[in-house]
Image (cartoon, rainbow, N blue to C red):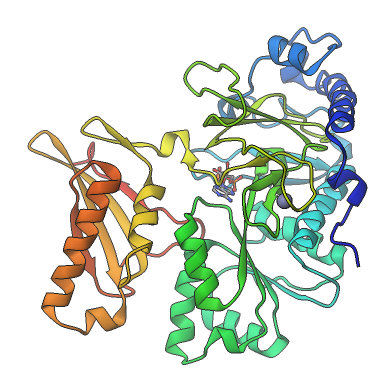
Length: 429
Ligand code: ADP
Ligand code: ZN
């Protein structure tokens, strides 16, 4: 059986792929001009990708919000068969429409991703992501069915029931938020069930920033391979990018998206390898084509060819959104750096929270970290030692002096959807 869902496209040689992109881009520009938002732009036919970059301005999330609800619709309203909306992590949700063809293309893309990491007919796929407006539910659902996997649309929450389904139906592939995966493990512990004794094989983790340390921990606890899944509802949802079996960068599908990395401050297009904001242009979307859409997500293009044989560009794991960056007394840092450090320390538990307060006109960083049950029940000396080690390692990583508070397992707040790790109290106290 082939390793590829669509071998010719996944392995298309670079020159051919560029030509195909230009062809799709021209069609996209022509379509986009049917929307009230892009109609105003004087977009004439472009000669090259460089000309496109020179002539077309960025589209921002703010534009989508300001032209709610139909300002970006490029087809007749009657051709729209579905709408989805972002989870609204950073403000009002944005609403995106899909034609029948958009849904088909999206389905095919998710199937390509799931197939790439080894999902096959006969697999049992349990989708623990939210169904409804959130794209992680239905997006994966259709992709898994297209492959021919038995698909369990269980949705989020109710951990005992999740485990019951895994046990009784021999679930082999699970789509799960990384923060929830760690929490789910504690329910396995409670029930005294070893997840490794089940049929679990592949975890698809994504939708929120997470560190390599988090992935490794999930893999070890569940005895699975975990793959990073990237997407955003504005350009379809999941399926935009996915790790292959190499687990070394996220392939972005260039037959569907034109990829740029820009300096978030100046808007300048950055050369491959430099870190900046990911900008995507949709190449096949009908209902809501987006031109040079600023995702807000920070990453960089990885150099070299992927040993998997796919030619589509790879990006580094998402570091966070540009507005996730914390400035503590003038020092810049990302929550993911804190996670990476915490999860690398034995004894640290399954949940943590970052709090920032203003004390004597200075910013103070508080790290609340749950500890493992064994440490919690151990000696005070053991706890103090752990606390000191966390503080030392964080100081070395961040160049900021944090206050570390250890917490009982299961005591920190949990989330139904994406994790909210940062509690910035500087302006509210
Ligand atoms: P919202 O913006 O409201 O969270 P979406 O559900 O569309 O709405 O989420 C898309 C965003 O989620 C992305 O722009 C990115 O910030 C984040 N995201 C998605 N997948 C990943 C991933 N694998 N790693 C890090 N962040 C991710
Ligand atoms: Zn690869």
